[in-house]
Image (cartoon, rainbow, N blue to C red; front, side, top):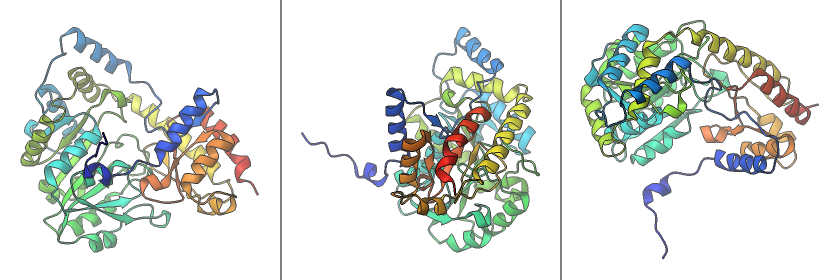
Length: 395
């Protein structure tokens, strides 16, 4: 029997990273030592006090269903966190806890978007934004940015991209994959454009907010444009800031009407997020945040080393980021000088073969001939990777 899959599945394409991941796994199985700079998760362990909270939750019997929207104590902790750290005021019925940040964005698109709605997504973008919108029968409108404008969408670009069909604009700061951070002025200028289009909702993905070393502190668009509160949804979670990627806890904060609709979607998919993970997240949000200073210092040290090292490679151009744990250097010139390499996907394959270093092709993030380089690994590993890469890109 031939199985015919849904048209929905055909709308989305496998990521170019899958081939690299599969090949890396195959080489490792053969005993080849691969250095991976592809990881999208911190290399630090979950802090001990958070793990202990998870163990205690098990011992206390948090092994059953919770409210679909999340445990009351976690939603309360999220409200306190948003007020304490972001000066944003929400009530528990304006919070939805989900199985990770990706799940939160999926719930949003399913609850908000209809067929033909347009979603403005600046590129480079996190790989899942466009496909999740396509699964909601919406149309991703990709707005390209470059190193020249700091990989940030400008007010002029935003204004030009908005049409009567625009339903949602997605902002991500600090950014995956570029590591750039929008300033207060930049967000205010974008908000001025959005204020002219009351039909447009805003999703601000703040998942990397604590991994930042910019001159200004982290700013949410609502801090500078509070008039957009009713049509902005804040997406966040504990995965990146607390090294809790496997615990699968994300959350959304926004209008009670929208959150109720998202909860309805979630009730027919996963129901609640894992109860034990929710209790660990309570500890993370309410606990001592001092460890983040050390983590950010380590990430910045790695960032600074890698920027300088990448810029010594012939035909590679890398800017300085201000947050997250990624760089997104331009390899366009390098690609033209390598025989048999015509694009970033082929470059990733070439580097895996020649020097056993795994990088993620930029086309997966909507920008060709760049590579996403993760520094969520030790400085020693980064140095080893550069020792392998340097001979490939020499005069």
